[in-house]
Image (cartoon, rainbow, N blue to C red; front, top):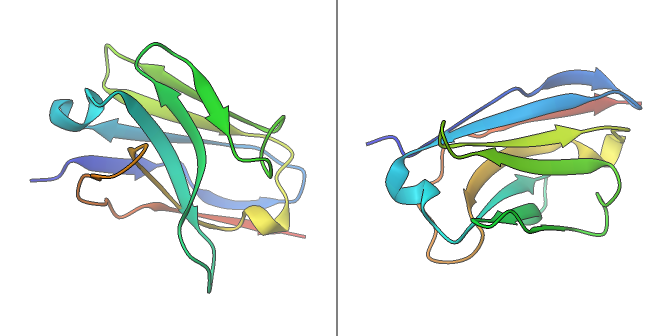
Length: 115
């Protein structure tokens, strides 16, 4: 059973913007905190932004001021608006809960930022 479906990635020039979307199964979306994670080539997966069921947000220092996480409870969807993209933002972006236990990981969406 597919629990998480990410979309919206692509190839963009440095300084550009992308908006990622993730549709989650209700059983996952009901978690107290949802998050976007990313895995850069050759690196471990890291959490970049999270949002609680009450709408409180938190960001990794590397993306503060550039990324905005949001959610639409009517659609079981979380979003990641990414502005002022940098080459180091390149990677596969996944949504999931904010902490263990995680749901089964989706396929992710590739973001490539060219300099």
